[in-house]
Length: 379
Image (cartoon, rainbow, N blue to C red):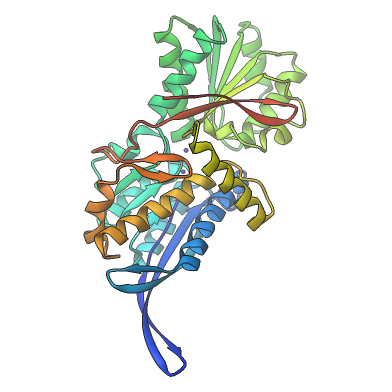
């Protein structure tokens, strides 16, 4: 699903006890839905960017022999494609040199053409629709696995591990929701499972009685929802009211710490199985845990979902600038494209020829006692 960072280059003179030291200002902007139903996820992303920027400034970074100071420009796209492209154009007009974003596939994809036309690198920390990196844009990258991997893995898991024989699928008709549901359906069918219903709603709906009543009549043992937690929560609540007590699955959009609250405490232990793009195992777990602790200390709130990916995306972009010795997009973009083996808090990061992450991991989760609990990391 999706998000942004912007870098503007300016020059600044700092007077230090009579001495003047030239310092380059590199503005990194972030775009995400910081208003609307999934504002909690957009703000989580923005905080991931702020954390990276603050740490880089505290360390002091030199690029091409010049000291640089990073500034964050934050924009709100409200998860709306039109607002997303307007935010993208605003950043380009501000002479940005890099973007991390957007959060949703539906805003990331249309915005990506604006960045491509301007030659400005874009790294999405969360957009999973395959189309994003299949448009032929050399400026588009992502640090998470796409829906082909995520939806397909969940589809196989529904049949092989949950022993789902009759499976119902609902999606919210967004680029993300429909995309991940389509790939889930393919995964189910490839594993010998049966889809007994395919329904759709929208990303602002609150009443699912008609859809769920129709689905209940078909007696599924698994319901999959392609969409975000703001809709999945009420849907789970209404499933319980209707006595539709079956396994509920979804992608990273529902795999958040807020889901139990949005479902008003109606989640049964182990009822939900969801997947988040990314995943760390073994020795890599410490870096992620350290990040979560530092994030909580800095912002007095827990990581929701994508903040670590945003944090890594900012740092990967800056690492490419350092290696290239330049903040100019044309100079550091080829270096960014060759990123391989970068050790982030979300694991090793490298890009393939399309800009997709290499060997992307997925983490499967469930919820117990209102808390997210890891099941397994799969690749």
